[in-house]
Image 1 (cartoon, rainbow, N blue to C red):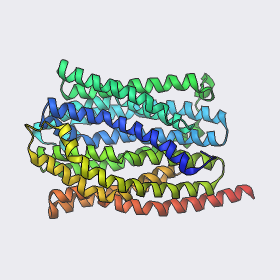
Image 2 (image 1 turned 135 degrees about the horizontal axis):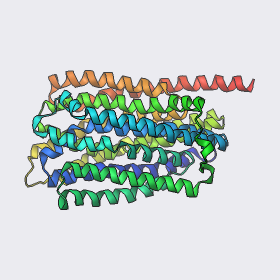
Image 3 (image 1 turned 180 degrees about the vertical axis):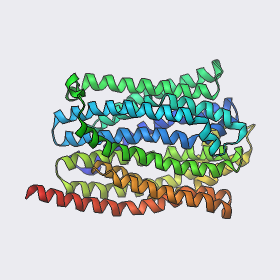
Image 4 (image 1 turned 120 degrees about the horizontal axis):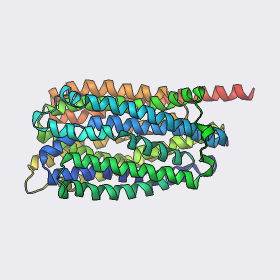
Length: 447
């Protein structure tokens, strides 16, 4: 990442990640398809009702893994291989303890949280059955994101994709097995996801041990280094918490959605699945620019980092234009993949299309969020992602409780775009401030 054309490097790194993200969405989409077609609309609504909580813990896992991987990437860019191993080992220890704590807390509070957000009574038990399994199996997600993040940190964005493809195919098989053959309903779908993620994490771990000798760990690397732990937490926790803060905003929107009933919940759920499919390009680009920034920061090349961000912004604009056409043409056909056309109210499909038509015009600020927020992690900043996430939370909360009153369902659809606009245009200012700070720091080191 520190030599060669930034455009070629970013695109070459982004597209395998994008493919991997698409397959990661397969986990969620297959769950939705199997539930929607073989269990029913109420079960589909139940999955939609826990979407914010699922995003909270899964996003936490992604943010934690990416944050810890930044330190490995910086050490790799600086050619400090001893530090790489220490960062990797401490990341494993921290991931284990943090993951266990989060898993236990959320499992104990599972049903109470669903009641607090006014989950409709007819889907409450199914919603709890699903999300409880996800909470209990959280460590599988945390370690997959850690190990895949470590691979990306050293420039390998292709291997995690291959492992994810294998895991996704297994997830499809297990979904069908645990719903159609062994009728476990939504519990079976959640269990299939956890098992598949666990296998993907194990494959990543053994691959790192076998193929990357520079990351081969010994007992000495697991000796607790409090200074390094503090450094890892300073970068990793804000990255993890920024996803969780965003998820709180999503949960708040879910409270408003729940008041509209299970049909609207189902439509919104389908719409967000299609949104997530199209927008997976943005987090892939964000991970690419984060690795690019971290390695070049390690090499002390700020001019190259600045050029990389400019190119990244141009890529965001291009993909956002492509997304306009994708949203228009694929939403309705894809909606019928999730639902049985013969038994589904056409209004559900229409509402899913309304959702996509509304949000897609705001994808440029959404792309800017992923570019600058994740990229700032690569620049060693934990504050910028957190500022962005809090901005999103505040704006999304205000929008969720005001716009639906004035505009009904259309107002619900606008809640997230309002948050994207606020955070999307604040982040470039934060990024420029961070670059000035780094420039001064490097000048002092030279002096």
